[in-house]
Image (cartoon, rainbow, N blue to C red; front, side, top):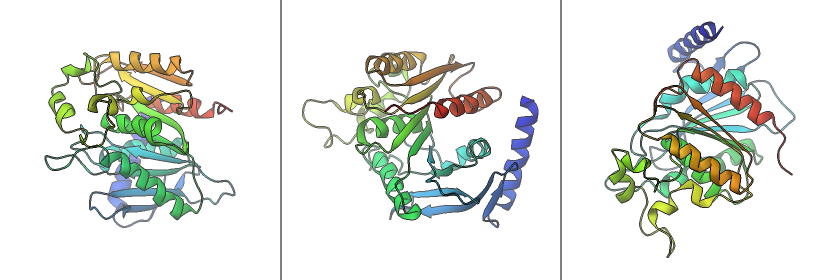
Length: 286
């Protein structure tokens, strides 16, 4: 069954890539039909582009939106890396809207934060204007994208538009000795956060650590970490779980067999999509 699932999705992806430049519709079967708009500019910077998928079937309800945020160490990566996984989610959640976004990458001339958090906010504002309502958001990201998903939800989402965070191998406590073994940790110290941004009394590392911002009103969070990940170790999962539990935030976390890039390989990807489905079905805290 899992093999058939993978083969079906591979065929769908091949068809999607073949027709991607011509068609404005994605048909995934079993009523999962979407209208698509690719490379929409949601800001003036050329890196601020996104793909948008809206269910073809009309609805009287205000649809929730998945915002998909790629990884790449804050300095690299592209939304195309998550096209296949986005299609898999669309097949599972045919009544949701999907955004697969790029954001401004860090460089020697540009810090990652707060720019990348601002980019997520700009996507949210764009969606409000496009959809003509204020949608509930489900932020899903892997690696740096998981980090940005958590940081936006815990630190920036004052209006509580984020219904849930799906954090896949995302760094969450940047001062953790386990994470300091990350081979690009010098970038985290020097170029992740613009030093002009954190208020007096908070370090740049604390400012960029999602766990620093968790409180009792934080968004429900599902996390997924690899048991042989040498980039973002399991200590990050344990720290995140501990802080979420301390503040009584609804959360679930799982381990998969493999390293940092193995979360979207079978059977890990199938398990994750089913776990997301069950997590989102749980009633919201009143």
